[in-house]
Amino acid sequence: MKILLDYTFEEIKNIVSQSGEAGYRATQLFDGLYRGAKLDEINLPKSLINYLQNEGYTAQGVEIVHCVESKLDGTKKYIFKLWDNNVIEGVLMKYKYGNTICVSTQVGCRMNCAFCASGLNGLVRNLTAGEILSQVVAVNRDNKSDDRRAITNIVLMGSGEPLDNYDDTTKFLRLVSDEKGLNISRRNISLSTCGLCDKIKRLADEDYGITLTISLHAPNDEIRKKIMPIANKYGVKDIMQAVRYYFDKSGRRIIFEYSMVGGLNDSVECADELSRLVKGLPCHINLIRLNYVKEKGLKGSDDAKIKEFKQRLERNGVSCTLRRSMGGDIDGACGQLRRKYIAGEV
Image 1 (cartoon, rainbow, N blue to C red):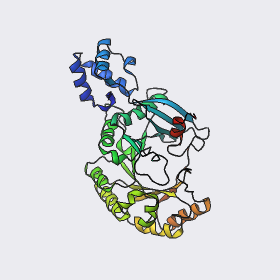
Image 2: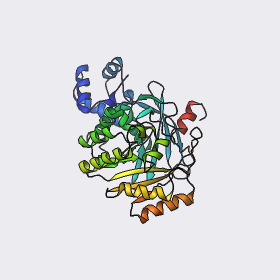
Image 3: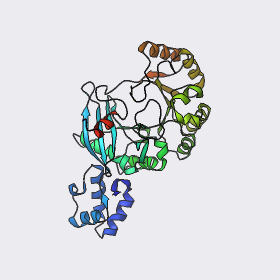
Image 4: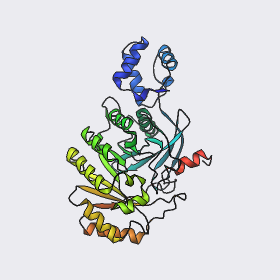
């Protein structure tokens, strides 16, 4: 299956040229694709539609098959179906400054972090750039009430490790920020990684200018190895070296994610060690209440522990916040809604 959203405008022009149709049809096709339209919904001659279908092209890489909206804050959680019947999740979060979509970059994940449901069945396959982009396009169409773009910000924090799918993830960044397409500023895009240090440095060298978010979750290797297998390859020292390199190249403040696991990483000693670790680096720490995943068995820290940890960081001069919990009534944990859909429970 060849997904047209995988292609740049110049590549779309070449496809239309090969069909023998007039050049202006490329603009009509391209604009229709970014509106989230299927081929038969775009104002194209039947001859061009037949050509594209006969050549194995499809317009969109995903189809929305289920959506549930939070009654608490308007957050929407989507199930997307892919052409091969795999399913992935996405989340639309509404803030005062705009709408943020959380997209997936893989079906499943092979990082197997101890607090995440996405990797329970391992990595199924990578998504193409067009399949990642299709999530944004589909949700944008589902939420547009006028000619303005509904999506203003993107976080690559859904299922999968974005840097484990480096080529398609970075192609997606180029496509989604293209002024001919959705034209979303790269300054409004955040990428979350568990710490693939070689890819972090490559991302810096290739100058994408996005916000880098590190799933750290521990101040040292001993604790991190208990919850993140990737820590056996890349130590905390390696990660800090890579993120300092990224900051020096990009000038972009680093964001660290820190899920609070009861009795494991939530002591004041951990807070002090974390403070020393990030000293001198322009950064911010997002403390996260742990979403319980029964297959994983980890329990989150209680509110008193989280408050104490946060106050300790602030006392040490570290910028930090407790991430606002959104969509708590719609299977907030990553992978939860997807598994219910597969089981036929939604």
